[in-house]
View (spheres, rainbow, N blue to C red):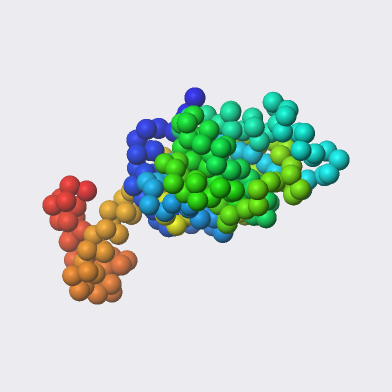
Amino acid sequence: MSKLKPETRAKLMTVSTATLCTALYKRGLRGQFIQDVRPLNPKLPNMVGEAFTLRYIPAREDLNPISVFTDRNHPQRKAIEDCPPGAVLVIDSRKDPRAASAGGILVTRLMKRGVAGVVTDGGFRDSPEIAEMSIPAYHNRPSAPTNITLHQGVDINVPIGCGDAPVWPGDIVVGDGEGVVIVPAHLADDIAEEASEMTAFEDFVAEKVREGRSIVGLYPPTDEQSKIDFAAWRKANKR
C-alpha cells in the first residue's frame, strides 16, 4: 500500500525537478538528480510515484541465454508484473544504453497496470512508440533490440544506483520535462511543501522580471519591498 500522501503527490505534480533539487541541496543532498536521463515525451504532466526498482548486472553468457525469458520468475518480467499501480519502475542499467532495458510491449503493460512511469539510465527499444504513450518514460537514448548480450537482471525492489543517484525502494520519484529527481521517502512531505512555496515565489519573480524589474533585491528578496509585494501578489492570485 502506498505511503505517499495524496496531498504530497498533488504538490509534487506542480513543481519542477530544479526546484526540488534546490530544496534537497539545502538539506545537504546534492546527488539526487538522475544524470543523463531524458523524457521521451517532455510535454506529459509530471511523473510522481514511489520507487520500485530493477537491477541489472553485466551479463554472463552461460547464465544468460535467450531461454531465460521463458522463466516466469525472470527479474525483468517480475518487475513489470509486480510494480504496484501508482509506483515508478526505476531500472539500474549500469548507465549503458547499448542494449534495451525494455521495449514498447513491456512499457505498454506497465501503462495498462496503472504504473506512474518508468525510468532507466540505459535505453529503451521502440522509443518512438513509447514516446506516443500516456505513461512518462525516461531514458538515456534509444537502444538495440535486445539486452541479452549486455544486461542480466538479478534483483527487484532493492537499493540501486540510477544515473549516479541512489534509489531506495519507496523513495519518491519525480520527473518533469527536464529529467528525474529522487526524494528520500522520509523527506517527501517537507520537500513537497517547501518546493510548492518556492514555486509560488518564483512565479511571482518571473512575472515581475517580465514587467522589467531588476533581480537585484528581488531574487533573492533582500529588499523588504520585495517581500511586501510578494505577500500582496499571493493574496491577489490566491497562491
